[in-house]
Image (cartoon, rainbow, N blue to C red; front, side, top):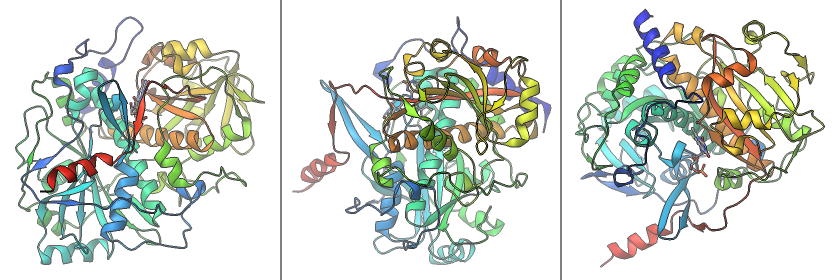
Length: 546
Ligand SMILES: Cc1cc2nc3c(=O)[nH]c(=O)nc-3n(C[C@H](O)[C@H](O)[C@H](O)COP(=O)(O)O)c2cc1C
């Protein structure tokens, strides 16, 4: 990889660190008049309303992860609609006074939702073959391009009957509006959350999400018609990735698309005009630059193996898989009292391990590169203090060498790669390094996600994005685990980078903290009203009807 791209990533990363006395550059105030619309609409293209799930797919908590389904759903308009609703659809409307905002199955930094979803689907009863944008507000598919019969047939041959493609893109402006230069990080966290959401939702129908590693960003932009789309300046969408969704049982899932198919897909005719999201914009050129430096070229990444370890528990939480997905929320405050048991804690950590044959990490994104530096506050039968959960054994010795001396490194459990570093009350430290957010200290535990950084960026600048995606996926697992175990989680994008590193004496770029998370007993804000996610569609229908 060229030294310049490596250096550009390091420079961006360092420039967007929060320090105790200096935050990463942003506007510094909330420009409410220009708050971006969180919903992308394409005008002037045919829209197909999707049915809302009248019955959720069956499945216990553990079926989020397990792949041994007895029933694999056929691909129909109904099953596609359920897949989208349970991954990227709305989960509720919240309100206070005259303000209302939608929440979604996928969380997002600042609830700004930069991530958009596209599909390439074969003909289904009620839907012609095409490239579609998923509009989560309408729970509808907006057709951006038709697929000819011939092309639809070629896709079927290449990806298999009953399979389809799903792509994600990011509108950086939505996050930059609030977070300024650090926004590129948040967009990529959100991609990771979305990936895990899609993987879990697919799994509940007996489908599997696989990452199409071989496609370049140029390929993706061409297939998605981004080069031909008339974006409002600063509101451009940027391709992130393509995945294939296929039946669980497929033994050799694709990792790329054949060249001839990419070429044919790159010549589609596009329709539809994107809506304008804000009236005025600030220009954050550093984001355009880091986006360019981290674009993916063609070709497959290094191969690696995931662990083949069975899931830990014998008795499962009783909530169904879809209840967990639908009730997921971020806590805004924690009670500073609620604890979880050591067994629960271990089961939660166990689910963050990247296993083969288990959602969501078996979509095969990256050799697991993220480890959890955990601030334990309230876990019964476990001493409060600092712990390290090493998700990839290969990094253990290097991490030990990269951190300060005097840490205990006592293995806590035979089965789990959990190490005690230091005992003591660490609530204040956790709060302090999380931009003084009480949620990090008042919880049962909080954590920093520490990435094998330099070695990955050295391999390819594009890995910068992948590292954030992996953190988002772990975050999503933690969100669902929190609900399953009767507590609540919150992602934490605001933390003081180097002060976190200082806690364990990380001095250089070999390992960097990329994302934080906290979990505990939430205090609900009872001033807020809650409305059903899609009641607004009934009102829209009644306005539409003569
Ligand atoms: C990447 C990411 C970073 C976040 N950072 C913070 C944070 O620093 N502080 C906070 O209180 N909430 C944070 N959140 C929670 C979001 O504000 C929350 O997801 C959003 O408001 C939507 O609400 P919901 O999660 O209940 O759907 C973060 C969420 C994500 C996904």
